[in-house]
Length: 210
Image (cartoon, rainbow, N blue to C red):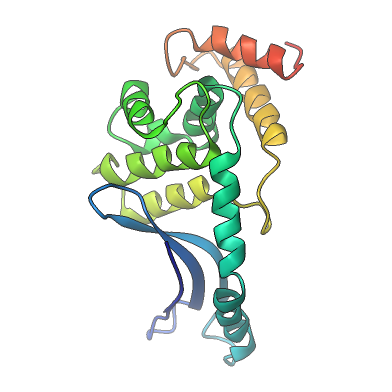
């Protein structure tokens, strides 16, 4: 894993000057790496350049290396309650089926390849499934900036205002929202056969009433 600072700027006056502090990590055994945006600062060309923001971003690279390493160590140790919770994160919270060529079967195949113990996926493994699909199986008709947005959504699994999210709270919110969608929208379809049954079991696990 590498961390670094990427600075971009447009010279036509329409784009902002931006500095992104990123983590670059391996997402595939073939050596493919993917930068994950952690923090960014931006300033428009209409204002006089304030270098302070960019100095702070640069300091973050130097000062937060240990924090990044600790966070990924924690992600590899935090297990989700079941594979169904991982799929709800991937397919409902991240809306992965919208961004890829394929459906639940393709996501499930990558899941089986990536997750060491399919019944006890870790947060890190769940993120790996998402980035693997977005990197290898993204829809050809979507512009790259849309796929980049999906990658940023996936990064929300590991960052909430600079901290790891409360995964129990995130799980409850995801389950409640998905249950409401399936119950109240006529065009809502199951992501996989038996999802409603699995969702009911998750609701029972988290003490959520129908």
